[in-house]
Structure formats: structure tokens, C-alpha cells
Image (cartoon, rainbow, N blue to C red):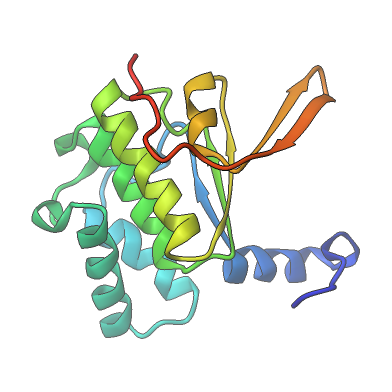
Amino acid sequence: RSGTDIWKLSKPKIDKFRLANCGFIFQGFNLFSALTALEQVTAVLKYKGFSPGDARARARASLEEVGLGHRLNQRPSELSGGEKQRVAIARALAKDPQLLFADEPTSALDGENGQVVIRLLRRAATEHGAAVICVTHDPRLESWADRVIHIEDGRILDDARRTPDANPAPLSH
């Protein structure tokens, strides 16, 4: 809820806040090897209190949104790096988070898959209304951001609000 100082909450209440309001996209994907793409996304929704049927339907819709409707039953070992990252994004977006944290979302991806991931993150902000906080060393991601904060050795070097490029330069690795 607005105006709540989360740092003053007890650990269980902070955990509830994270579950209710935050989505996380990890650099290493953090997928469970034994679960299918659909099960990866469904699992987090069950923790949020969705019934099994509602969780499954919402997970399917989220995976379809990221272009993986045809890969629902694949396990991580059967997916490319870009597909794994899209499962991670679907898992985060299915929760409908207010805050979406992405740690180096393009670092393990080729240029084409990096483009897909960044467009999905931008859509999370523009269509889902999430505040997307992306930590990266890739300066090419700046053209997609409406706020860029440069940090070095724990110090803020600059903090600039900007209008994202309508046609940003493609990412390549």
C-alpha cells in the first residue's frame, strides 16, 4: 500500500510484500530443471493464492504473451537461452507486479534474443504499468529507459530522466 515504509516491516510482512508486488528476472534464469515452462510459471501463482485452474490459465496466457505458447511443456534443458529468459519474464509478469527487477537481462543472450527481452521489459512498463528496474553493464539498454542512473563503487554518478528512443539501436553481443 502506498506510503508504507517497507524497511520497518517484519520479515514475514516484507516477504508478503515481495510476493504481492515484485517480480524478479535473474541473470541465471533460476528455473527448476524438473519443471516445464508452464509449471515454472504456475508454481509462483499458486504461492500467490491462485487456484490450480486459474494459475494454469494465467501461466499459459503469460507464456503466450512472451511468444512461448508452443513451448509450454518443455523443460529448461530443451530451451534456448532466450527462451529460458522469456520463461523467467513470463513467471515475473504473471504475478502482475508493480515492481519488476531485472538483473543483467541480456548478458547471456545473443543480439536478437536481447532485443526480444528488452521489448518485453519495455512492454511490462508501458502495458502492464510496472516500474522496471534493470541493472546492467550494457550501455545499449539506455536507449530503452526513461530514467538512467549511473552508479560506480556504490556512488550515484548521475541520474537522468529522459524520453526513450522511438527506434532504439539494435542490441548485439
